[in-house]
Amino acid sequence: MGRKLSGKDLIQLGFPKNNTINIALGTISRYKKKENKDAVLREAKQVLQNPDAYLGDGIWGKVAESMVKQVEIKRHELTHTRAPFSIFGADAIDEQTKYQLYTALKLPVAAAGALMPDAHYGYGLPIGGVLATHNAVIPYGVGVDIGCRMSLSVFNLPASFLKGKDHQLLNILSDHTKFGMYETHQNKVDHEVFYRDEFKNIPFVKGLLDKAYKQLGTSGSGNHFVEIGIVHLAETKPEWKLIPGDYLAVLSHSGSRGLGANIAKHYTYLATKQCPLPSNAQHLAWLDLDTHDGQEYWMAMNLAGDYAKACHDDIHRRIAKALGKQIAFTIENHHNFAWKEVINGEELIVHRKGATPAAVGQLGIIPGSMTTNGFIVEGLGNEASLHSASHGAGRLHSRNVCKSKFTKSDIKTELKTAGVQLIGGSVDEAPMAYKDINAVMQAQEDLVKVLGTFTPKFVRMDK
Image 1 (cartoon, rainbow, N blue to C red):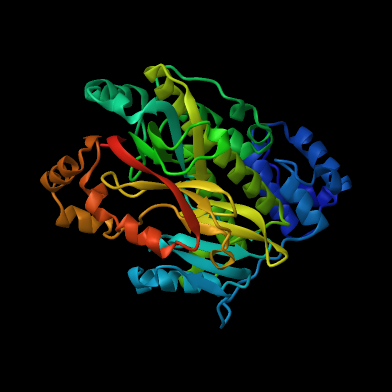
Image 2 (cartoon, rainbow, N blue to C red; image 1 turned 60 degrees about the horizontal axis):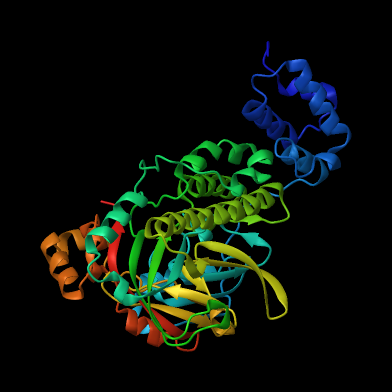
């Protein structure tokens, strides 16, 4: 655009001599670099003359915000006292994990917290950590894999349908699921999520649309999986239209792929710049929801959550089509997400990092390991847990410990004993890496009611 636009140009337009100029130059450098200088200055002048009209705008919103109300950037210190909290299954949770929650509870924005019985150490909040905050969202309190979730689809097919179909069902998993960073489906599909306003109005998110399209219906690495197995319904709901009994089911665990990871990285960077914290709490930097960046992250986070659901829907659709059968009903829940919820009469931001929402009557699925039962549950709305429950069994051993402690032969023995067949999987995801799911469920009897179980039989993971 000819000679580089400078702060002097903006001052000549009438821009205030404060941080607004730096924000405007950053915006122009990021989004207007290739445009004509005079055209950019005319646009900047319109923002200057009527900033209220540009609040929330994907490109100029942050500049307009700085004119209307400067975002205060100051170093925050932790408080001396913790916000109220509860820990479930405390005896099975190590001290390092508990102290990670204690640090979060000392944030100035913290209102309440809880630790689920599957909890273990993570980044920012511990896995299995729940934190309610006052009008603030913590990107690392949500996690890198935004909207990571469990999805269980039950078919009106008796468990006996699986007999003699080992080869067919393993082939379905092999052909219709994709894992890891680079595998994608050859036949890609469209989805309404790609037409959301966030993909049009948030420039950073718009740049991730192509990646999101390519990765739809795929799963990541690590502990993500797709399983075919048997659901035992001890109780049923009228809307399920199934009587108690044993049925074929598909369970998947994965999240928002590259879309969510990039959103988490970008907004975590912005949070750490705007909210400096002591080094032991820096991963807990937050975005004020009254700011442009806070609102933008909230929209992007919700988009990533809906995209994660779209991925699961596509996985289950592909498997149902391969089976030639229709899904009777699906139970699904995010973890790694934040919600606006009323706690003790006040609207708070409730972060659940590796924790399942468990409001009164809310349905969920809590898996164990690939060789143990998972549980279909109904939330009891326990206020002490901030209406939450565990999202799984939780790790007993870290990935590094697994690599030194277990062998592939150990895993094969465990799988054979449980009657489970595995495609992929690595030593660091050995069934023995996880806590006893029955002990975890016992520790949260006040949080959820068990309606049934899921027993894996055929499992697909990344190699």
